[in-house]
Length: 243
Image 1 (cartoon, rainbow, N blue to C red):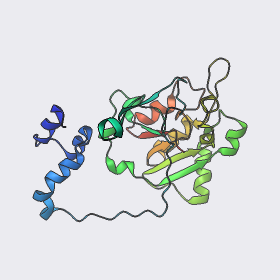
Image 2: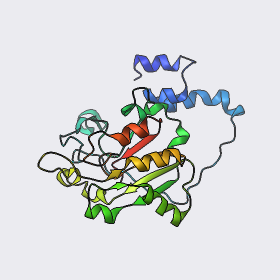
Image 3: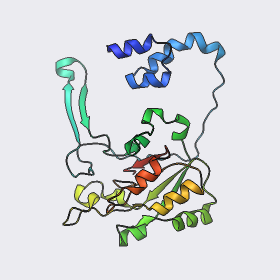
Image 4: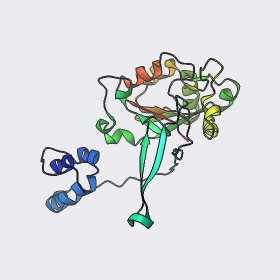
């Protein structure tokens, strides 16, 4: 069941394996390429991990959205009883749940997600914990002092790190009201990164990206989204809605 674009991709020698992933044909491309390239294949370096954690929330209709409006819809398309197999149609706003902000999100000339170098998506994680402060002040932000405090305890941030904010906000993800934490005027209140922290990470350190356990890289009251603009303008990525 290949659509025309997919068939064209398979017959086009200019198309890379990564491009084929757009059409769901990565496995097919690998299978087709294997016999001709197996003899020439370079040895694969084994990657090992000492500590692996799932940082994703379960994505469903209940997950809070930035707008507060329903942003995820799932409908059963086929069933075992009627069709002999099971499958759903899913419609959603791409910035719902645990997700990655590609540079193009706030940078007109930025990279799309499939254009990000895959090696930049595997990174050592540095978790900046501001949970206590966030409990007192939901509008708090990660600062350079928070990063330096982390380094005094664990050592300098490794090159290519993902700097992740832990504010305890993930515990609110079951409730749109609590997660968005909007006041009577509609302004939301939740933690994020501060501009000073981002500028420090971009000029004094070499990071791959950042992540937050809230709805936005910028804190809730932000009206200018300066963290988004500053970070994504460098073709780095941001993770939102981390667990």
